[in-house]
Length: 65
Image 1: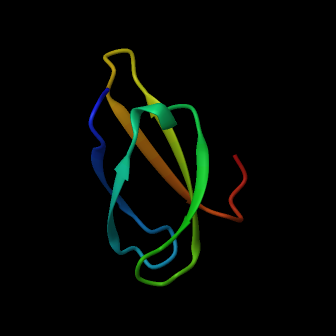
Image 2: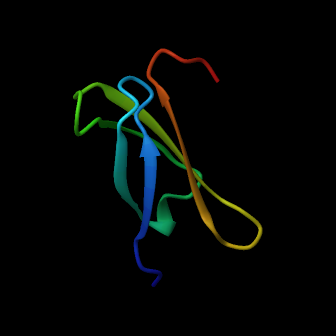
């Protein structure tokens, strides 16, 4: 079992840096979590690269893919 990975992302609304914990089992998933500062919904996309490192991208809920 892999430990949770700490990632720092910037809120797409207010720009504030947010620390999130990501589980390796979330790789390939998307989920919505409210910004801890401005409370607006952020869409998180979790992926894993070929070396096994997690990456997280964020976007506001109105952005298209």
